[in-house]
Image (tube, rainbow, N blue to C red; front, side, top):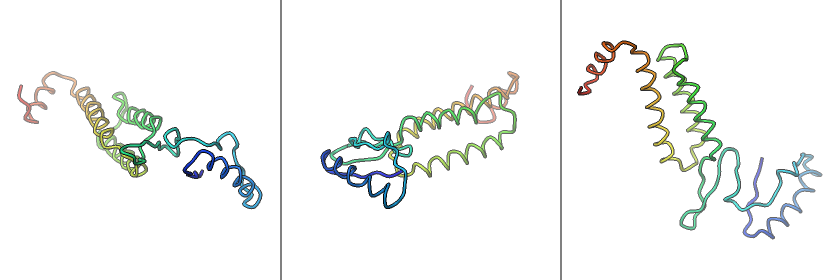
Length: 149
């Protein structure tokens, strides 16, 4: 995968037209003609990233489909019907989240991660709440954490 950036649409079309023979002929690479196109940067999705403009500056963010995939994987990892200990679940969550954040480290995602953190904390609380089956256990655990009743 690669992208070429140009100042104008006309320049981009000329660059695409002139580079295709070189890539296919000299470099002997296959070019997917369906994917090869001239688009404005704000309409492009590339390796899980999308682009936007703010204050005259082009910025990178995580593409919505990538966020949806992450959320579905987190749902799978935090499923309340999953067996296994909380330590194993925590380890898997930490590995997945660290890998995801490292991959998308170039993107602007502070507010998205804050929302995702709230959502994930609620899911983890649900897991613990399901494990504390009896009212007596719930009462003891809540009191242990210092939460006023």
